[in-house]
Every structure is written in structure tokens, then in C-alpha cells.
Length: 374
Image (cartoon, rainbow, N blue to C red; front, side, top):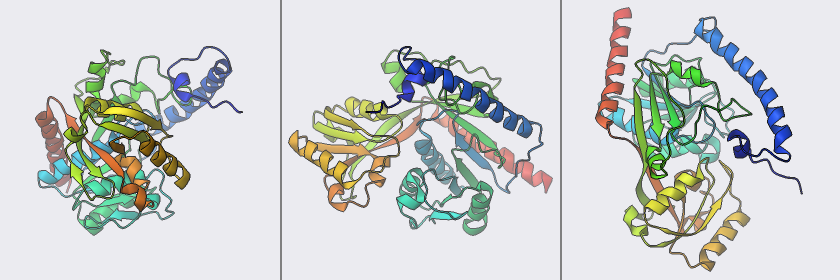
């Protein structure tokens, strides 16, 4: 049987014996060439040899410099609601990771109705569209085109560009970078040797950094493994907190307190499954089984049947998964009837008001500059 590569061991500089030794050498060589390419591309943009396109309204980028989940989707949802509350008309544009559409512009939601299913839209855009009311969600490989569609067809006056740190064709007025407070240290390498999409020095392009899951770091007594050396750059801390529990078919909604001291059979296919497990534990659930699948995993009928049998066999009170997993099971309505979904949201702590003022003031500043140019 072929041995599977545990990339986490390579990225964390673990596994110094066996076949991991030559793998580290090979990935280090590949990382060198990757670094040359990404550094050259960034230099061409920095020197304005490659041009960024400025759209006629402020653009907020939500991105990261690592692979894996840092919490971009909850951050996008939080930002959209914040802007809506302050009287803006935001729209979300995304590349649409995992999308099966071949069109250059795809309207996932017009703000009133979801128009694409999760397989065509991709997991994250579909989930964002589910959560946001009166806010369009548009995907496409060319974000300039999706941004223009949001402005011209839906009257958006602020664009939230999802996962756009490395997408430099579109000019962003606010560049937010999310860093998982548990997942970085000074020894990190670029892909494929490490989890970095680009070197840490490129954080200089950010206008602010949001450290995510800082509560989980504190609970484990860990220190944030990377020192952010930037001049006059705000650094905000955030947590992912449980919002509520819903039945996957939307037939029922409960407070998170309902799973306290209850037996739970859980499963997920996300980048950071331990975060889901931690939230369940903190909510007081007794986790009888926790099945982990690959990130963005598409479940088939036999897998779901095995999960159902395990749930019934261990006599758990709840069968639970994440929102992202639930959207990938929409084609199995009978399974949705027994499945509960833990919904989480991002919260900036302890300076939520300062973060909101930072975003709103920068948008107003951008608008003022645009008026002066006109």
C-alpha cells in the first residue's frame, strides 16, 4: 500500500527520518524556484511594470499568506454586515475556489435569491451567499469583471474581495491579512516546503493584520509564533465563537448551550478540523467520535451511510458538522434531517469598535480622494 504524505509534518519541520528526509530536500528545491517566481511577480507590481486596475469604488481585500484555513469566510461575512449596518451597499467578489463554472462572471446570489448550487458556486461563496441577505455574491476568475458587474448591475459602493492577497491585478484600498495565531513561526518556508504562499516580508503590503483564533492560543498556553515587524500597522485580534446550532435542512434552530453535556458524533472536511473540535469541547459537548476528511471533501452516499451508522451505533444525541461541510451534502435530503450544524462567527476582541472605525474611516478617505480626482 502506497504511503500517504503528511504535509503537515513537512511544513512543521517534523519527520526527520524515513522517506520524509528526501521529501524535504525535494520540496526545498521546488520552494526555491517558487520563491523566485513569486518574488519576481511582486517586484514587477511594486515597480508598476505590471499595472493594478482601480475600480470606481473602494475595494477591501481579505486574504492570507498561508495555505489552509485562517477564517477568511467568517471575516468576509462580518465585514459585509458591518458595512451594511453603516449604510453602505457592499458586494462580495471571489475567485470561487472549487467552482465548476466556466463563465467569466457568475452571480451566486443577487442579494434576494441564491442562483447557483454549491457545486457550481464553490463552498465558500455559496456559504457566504446563504449567510448574507441583500448583498450580492459574484464569482469569476477575472475579479475586475466581477467587480464591474457588482457596481454596474447591483449598485455596490464597496467591494469585499475574498482571498485576494496574491491577486494583484485589482487595486485594493484596504488590504486585510489574516494570520492564524497558532500556525506561524520564524522557520516557515514557502510552498511546497512550507505553508507560506509568499514570504512574511510581503506583509508590508497589508494595511492591517487580523490574528485569528487567539483564544485557542491562550487556552493552550502558546505564544504567537511570529513577530510582525511593520511600521504603523494596526494588528487586531479575533476569535471564532459559536453562534448557534441549526438543523441542516433549516427546520430547527437552537442555542449552543443545548449541546452541553450531550453526546456528539462529529465529522468535518476543513483545513483546521481541530478548531471545530475545540469549539465543541468548549461548548461542553462529550465527543464520542470525530471523523476527519480532506479539506473541501465531496461526500458520497457510502461515506454518509457509514457516518449515519456510526452515529446510531454509538447512541449519540447529536450528529454534527460545520457549515462548509453541510453545503456539500445538500444533495442528500434524508441525511440533512438527522444532521446538526454548528455555526460560528468572527468577533474582533477586545477592540471591535476600533476595528470598525478603522474600516469606515479608510473607506471615507478613499471616497474623498476619488472626489478630488474627479
